[in-house]
Image 1 (cartoon, rainbow, N blue to C red):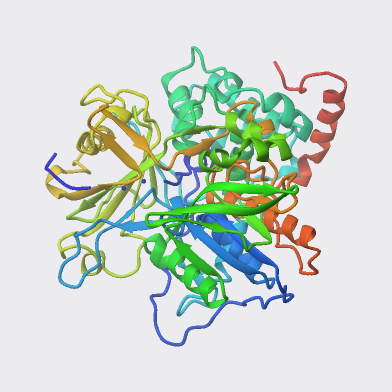
Image 2 (cartoon, helix red, strand yellow; image 1 turned 90 degrees about the horizontal axis):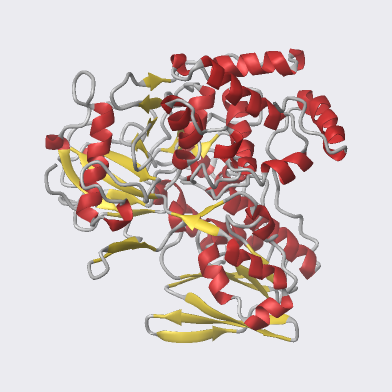
Length: 601
């Protein structure tokens, strides 16, 4: 692999790719900026809230959402962000790569992915104006028409063009299993008896009462539920590992079945077209995230009156008389106190928030101590910039069986305009964005885990693992001579002294039994609220959508505490098919009687 120079997150719809096997109709690319812009409906402030000042600590997805909802309701809002607006969702330039008036090549923490069952994010996007777009930045979403499951040493699998919706109203449990089995057959990649076990477990979850999900399923790992031991390589690689490692960077031996099941059924209903409110299953942005979304959002918030203070990191929170009285903020040039806010929203990642919970804070709300038991893992991305357009797939690719649980997307095919004319030195025609979801398994080149590899070794190892999957049959899809450069997420920092990486941006993982440790958006401290993907939400997974949902919950709680007459933000719930409600009622009776699910073997 030639020498190159030096980013990561989101998620492949590994579950969508597997469970759905649905290739979605391709949407037209978003219109480029132009004259005659029309703005989406913008909500006027519902009430002028004199003296109601809010300090938001963190300007990632949760912080920007909270600021948006609050400023629309007449609050005076200041956002304090230490690094960059957008957090893990942002894009970032690869420094010094743009020449001749072109932009630097676009790097990122990881590729953006917007499943059709996301509803809070699209609602926010429609309210952010974008020149030429009737529906704001929402119109910058385009759909990926196909998925590819790449297997080293074997035939790759590509999703078919369409799939027929299930008629849930005519299904009993046995026929539902048979129909889902046909969806998950994957061309015979899974042995029939193992596929039958998987579909039985899936139907059990779909027809379980909420109480059983929150109890039994929450305390089982995905591996335990699927009885992974002794199963075929295909079963373990696809149904056990890919649906956890490549979807949420979680180990199947520790991920909660409740979390994977909730997300799994959302992907299934979305892919099968059974929910009219859901959009295309696999949606991406038509430009780097900052261009298509984050920068227009920041401009809107500032136009509405939000103050954004960059470079400031919260280092302590002060409490007196049972209320938060201020926050001590640190900057490269010193520190200062923020003591003029009436309300405080902690919109920091979980690992940053818990560092601020002093004994005084924990005395006021002992439940916050449970956050220390939450687990994070690494899911970080790297971008490869290529001389030729990639022809790997018209959508996401899951590299099954790769030690580092890789997923990728070739982005130029979805971005408006000509990539080479807009970015780099004029000779770069594509960006292959790759997520590395397993940083603790030895690779194939150096025999080392990713955490112990230098940035150059990470780049070569990731490239080699993809080549092993893509170049095993026919013409090579990834050629060394096409590689121009690469960019690793700068949140990953190599320490030559310790011979190990650190990661500034880990991802929350919902391990079995961890739901009890996740807080609500409101705390026992009357003017402190929590917003972040670790807060309890309906989406139940560390995603942009859960961060947005949690911020709306925090704003709703703040409005109630402030006695504001403003309407609470819109909230959405994942679809639960009413046709399956009779089965869930039966299961509730069995659960309350101490009996297992009727399909339990």
